[in-house]
Each structure stands twice: as structure tokens, then as C-alpha cells.
Image 1 (tube, rainbow, N blue to C red):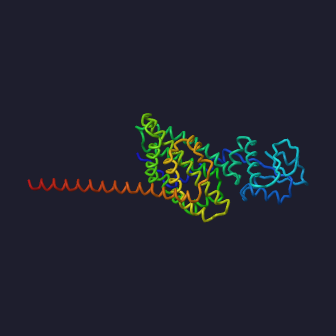
Image 2: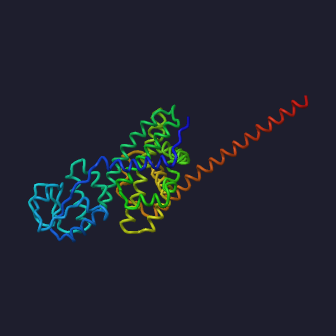
Image 3: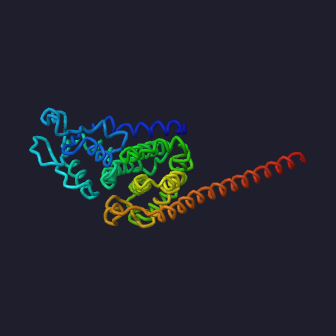
Length: 354
């Protein structure tokens, strides 16, 4: 029996995946010491979202008992030299590079249970967010291979599992990047626009085009592997899907940091096409594994706005190819149906003449 995932179910799975990280990872308490409260608040606003910094930062001024305040703090950021029993980073200046180093140091000393939440809620080190996203992509790509291993049983069950996995992957990516406006963008523009043809019925048709590109990129050795050819292709598509979402969301994130609302709106409205087109570009370049992306330097460079617009065109073309094939299939069906009707009519005419 065919199983369909409607828009409401997809949205529920997306939100569930986005909320999962919040339940699995606890935000650490960060102490900031050595400046006036106002200056320490200003610094915290540079690092964290404005509606969040108060819940994760403890501001310690000279009039406060440091020892008492440190009891509930996980790490200390200090603008003055201080002997501390807890991990402490002394901040010499507040340049961008200095803040990036501070964030990297903090992530390295935090317990595992605090790392993901910290990386999510800091808004400066976007490349560190991408590093965590890549871990999630690697996990999901392994699951895609398991689903796609048997080429003799590629049915609706596999489609549902893959769609669910990709929705979960998309949710984890959106969560880690923690865009301030992403939830509002989804509500304002509409989930149908954001999800577009990514994971809908049409998306499965588009995925077929990506699967063909992946199989072609894998080369003739993939066919020799027998059952693993579909698994390897499914993995390649999942990796391309995850990497593409990451790059497109990262572009929105960069636009948000620079307060470029026009770019945020444009990328959001063409999100589906940008992801599909970027995936096409990756597969056309022969990127089919995590290692391929690492060797190519894909993770080190951001997509420019011009590259995004070019990829949006590729995404539109991929979807148009799917529509054209559907039209051709419909026309063939109508032609065959018309021939059957004519044959039936001729048969009855012949019978009536008898």
C-alpha cells in the first residue's frame, strides 16, 4: 500500500528534528569578567543572539564576589588576568579573529554534553557550525546506504525511510545554524515554498535525476558491485543533499550577519531550487563521498551569491526535466489509451456486422 507524507507530517518531522538537539545538549553557563556590566553585555551580544545571551552568560564585575559567582559557571571569559579553578580564557582584544579563537577554545574545553548547544547558539563562528553539520551528514549518509543496498526491493517503504531521514537531516542542519529568522521565514513564506520540490512526490521524481547523476559519477565499477550500486548512489545523493542544504543555509546565515534582508528573502524563496541545483553541481563534478568533498575543498569555501543564482537555474532545469518527462509519459498514456479505445470500437463494430 502506498504511504504518503503530507505537508503537515513533513513539518512535524522537521520541527521534531530541530528540537531534538535542544533536548540532547545542554547550554553551558559562561562567566564574563573584567569590564563594566554594559561593556560585558555588549560583548555577549557580539557572540550570542540578542534574545539569548542573558540566559547563558553571567556578568561578574569588580564589586561582586568572584568565588561565589564561579560556582555555577562552566567556563570563564576574562578581560583581566585571574587565577581560576575553572577553564579560563583571557581576552586581549575584541577583534573578529580574537572572538573566533575564543569560540574555538571554548568548544574544545567544554564537556561533550555542552558542545553542540554552544556551537548552535554562538552566532559568529559559522565555519564551526558547518563542521558540526558535516558530522550529521556523515551519520545520515551511512543510513542512506543501508536503505538503498537492495536493488530488488526499491519500493515506497524505501522512499518513506529516505524522505524521513532527509527531513531529519534538514532539521539538524537548520538547528545547528540556528538562524534567528529561519522559523519565521518558514511561517511567512510557507513550508511548501521552502520545501518546494525537495521532499515531496515531485521531489522523488527530481531525486531520480540526482540518482542517475550519482550513478554516472560512480562510474562502471559501481555496476560491477551489484547490489551496492544503488546503495552507493543513494549515499551520494544524501551527501549532496546535506552538503547543499548546509551551503545554502550558510549563505542565509552570512546574509543575516551582514543584515542583507534582500538576499535572505531571495535565497529563502528559491531555497528548494538552490539546494537541488547545488546538489546537481556537486554530482556533475564527481563528488560522491564525504572524502571527495574534503579533497575538493568544498567545505572550506562559501557559495557566492552569483554561484547560488547559477545553481538555482540548475535546480529549475532539473525540475523542468522531471515535468517534461511527466508530460511525455502522460502523452504516451493518452496515445495508448486512444489506440485501445479505437481497437475496442473496431472490434465491436466487427461483431455488430456479424
